[in-house]
Image 1 (cartoon, rainbow, N blue to C red):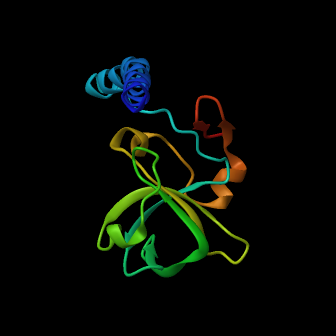
Image 2: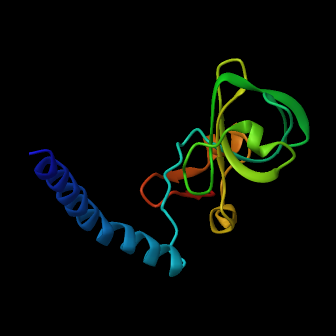
Length: 140
């Protein structure tokens, strides 16, 4: 009876792997074709350049500041990245701040994302028009 249970478990694992492999293959194909993940940034996000120091210290647009206590950093693949891994990294990012002005959420941008026009100040964001679906800003 023990051999039957092991066989059933192995068969179930094989079936699950077979069901997932087309999705994994298409994701690898899309990455190989140069297609990037379409990320959606909030309207409140601003563009800037960041340098990561020992957490939670950063330099944002040349000004030394700190990350908020509940900060999150998204890598170019949109997965969360631990800030200790980024020490010394200089990158172009989109970011949001909390009510105290500390950086709360950061998205490290891929080169194609960094080429898009995005506001760098709250005044620009207030004056420009945002298309949330296309993830584009239009200047007046």
